[in-house]
Image (cartoon, rainbow, N blue to C red; front, side):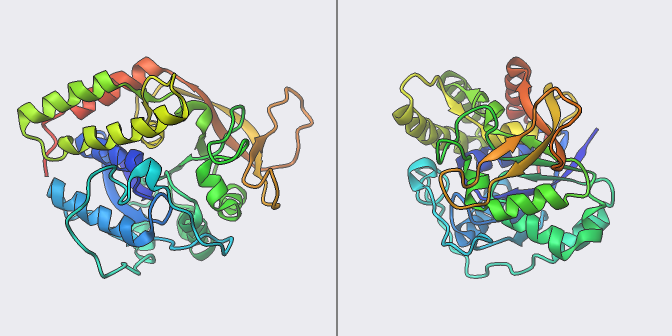
Length: 321
């Protein structure tokens, strides 16, 4: 079954690989992209969306300009050491964008077009999604499902000892989304995404395929993921590959995704201090749990199924513009 996806992205390496994955995967129908600040600036995110459109030749998917700043009011921090100066690792897109696409209200029309048959996948900061809940509360009820990459529940954070980057980057927004989502969220935290490893051997195997098939889209993958892997290897010399956080989150919407969830009350710490941005949940086996919003939190997935499906999709040459 084809899934219509509105993709909220901050266009770092794993975001871009996820978009390329959607390009090749026949089950995912990307119907719109919201370009946010996060791994890169909003301006660079909009530019990166245009660059991917240019490479793929698919220019009829609308791009919406998302948030430029978090709801905290702080200046966002970008991560060139992780994602490269432009969000593509070592690749420098040869194009400039002057129009920042202040067309966010267009997502309302898009959701109404695919009423009750559209899935939102948010793999960056949650500032834009929170804004949508504030501006369009009735429209957002017509979204079929929500998948959020964010949080760290039973594993350390990746920005602080307890906080994951997307929630830490704007915990106010994350708190709004968790409290005002019209249905239970599927939260895909570091607990599972850290294990969504793509090895250098698999990257090389894919690259050989893209060289043989002269796939301009596919040839973006290796330089980006190699750059990403170098960063992770510098932090953890024992790591066997690159964790594709955002690809796992997008894979989760597919029909055969073997991923398990625990329904639990959850909240985000918004008080400044050492716990700022921390995601916590009540996993106790008790009938008297805390009165927080209950959402679906993923704590396990089938790695072999993920890698099999990812590789199968990424060598699919049938899906064309």
